[in-house]
Image 1 (cartoon, helix red, strand yellow):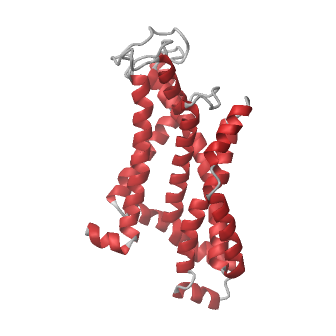
Image 2 (cartoon, rainbow, N blue to C red):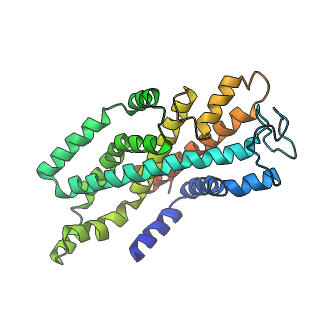
Image 3 (cartoon, rainbow, N blue to C red):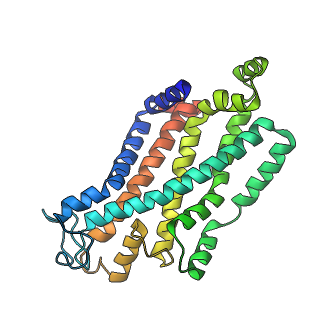
Length: 292
């Protein structure tokens, strides 16, 4: 456990870009976690997401920082609630895909030989299977599709990206002296993987998880924008779908469109900032270029 904590601390202190990206993600996680409290504060005892509680199409003001929508619902409360649902999909898809990808990558990279060939072939097959058309088909023919089912399908087809990246690192690390020393010390394969290899690969696993989660969020947004999302749960994509259907921009009611777009853009920026920071730290050529 101590090695894992030291690895996490090293990840945090590795780059200023990594710190900024993590802080942005942490802010949105807090915003999503405390969305019921935010709604209670905004509503002053009333539900700010109830229809006709406030005047429709209000622009940002002191009472409603992001204005209201067509039905008088507070857009700030909507954004926090929608962010919570979107992050839930991202976390579920990210955890499932990363977990499966890590297992496949460690087995293939550490064992090598025929095991590596078989698992690499399976990984390549999943890489060429388009997941978005399958999601469209499922959503078109199923009225009971849920956010969890979408997250599960996304995880099934997103694990190969993490698996390929981590496998290449395992292939590089398995021949290091400390791994050979662990074998001499009679450690079994599981102990070598979890005690020697895994702590050194936490940055790559973290980036794989963040990328898979972000991909799931954007896939859900894509489904909602074309009208094939669940529709029964408020998320960022559904807000964009409403702004499109209602012609919000033509009416001058820009907050309901801008709010989810800004949130998605900042999430994308944060994940890429972390990725760039880690690349500069762990890639020697980029480290020389960045002057680190």
